[in-house]
Length: 625
Image (tube, rainbow, N blue to C red; front, side):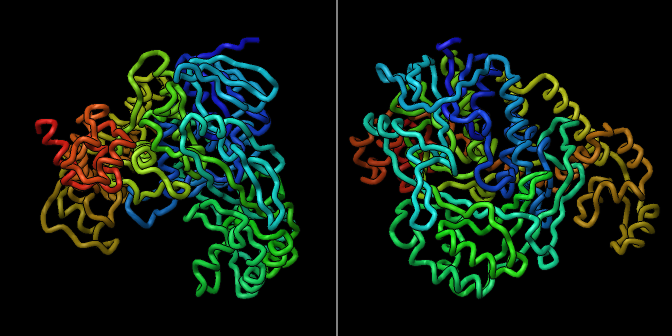
């Protein structure tokens, strides 16, 4: 038994698993401390991965060499690509997962990763000496030494659950809270506060009347999360179901509001704005007659169903009575009621872009302890924190993603620059360069970075290069191939499209929004022959990537120019360069915020709320620019 490690990760949720795997695969001896080894990467709330902007994060994790995409693909029981009616910058993959298989797949990865060890216990104290973390103490009285520590405790730090007036300590139902670390860090000057999240009731599938619900099946095309071919689910695919609340449901819930912890003063902390409880929906949207709910399976074979959209901390009897007013659920048997949970988090402005804390060297935070919500946001942070824990102790270059490189970069920059006043959730609207951060090309953007780190494998890198070559060859074929009007017009008119007045390059023909490459291949044998030459297993993926490059070339090129201009400000390093309180030309607010955050670059300073363009100009003048 060893008691000395390079990196210790506290918590085996989505952030902790990615952090531990990354650090170990990069060469650091790593210890993952968790309260329950049978609930590694537990999907505490919805058994689903991805969604709007979140799906992009998972593809970025996979492109860098992380594990979430692989685990999700292997445990998927339904896959859908959201936002198909919009442009490709908005397309977002989402997958229902088998909760048990998700844990099993992650557990196998953890067990099989060389240099990664596990200890089942509760961390109660950090060993900190001379402003640097040196290890972790546990509830069993064991002290483990480490050169770096990653804290990914999720909702467990002083977690408190609420079901009506009933309160239970814990980080998740039937699991104890973690105490000691918040208090220790607060005594060292860390700013901490409380947030709230919640989860809905779980239903017995055998007691649902599906004839009164709308069926929603998944999609079975080439899309998935991992860029590695052959990583697919062999599980039976299951549908979801849509139902709606009604006046009777709302009447029961309104009568129960005086007993709601959210509205009787019992819960003081802030919950997620974009995933509100059902009682919050009633108060926020009093004129709405109904709210859409999704009945989602928890696994391939289980009868347990998740009622998405009905998160609640109301008394259990109010929840049950309200649900019984939904026609499809009038006889529904409940496995357990929904509950809310309050937990500690730390102001993320106390972190650098590597997710290392500014107050304690080689101590990293990732996940909900930074004020975020969502498995995907947590996993993205965990990956970055695990990488940088290794890089730091090895004296290597820090790993930081820019806002024009990845949604993960947007997420972390928002956290450390702006802070949070509610649980942070990623949206496509948060990314100013989202046309560059599409889900289809995350491998092109990030696999070279992961490969240089040593996290993305040679196999993954070679696959990316082969795909890139085939995409570029297809685009070049379209640029070079001439289409004669006399030959193509009969086919165009047959499908109701405007005929050509003269011959054009295939590239220009494909700029028509109504035409796809596969459609045009039916008219042009040479194109069909070229498509047949593509790698069979990834043919559709390559065609889609080439088509996006062709149709959106102008938008992408313009966005790249804008990103380059903005990026220049992020190359002007100002950390520790100025004594901000003494720069009287700056506004009072600017002096205070710049002093508190001590931004790394001019670019980061420009994104701090309250910093005006004139403040930035003053800093540029002082730099001699």
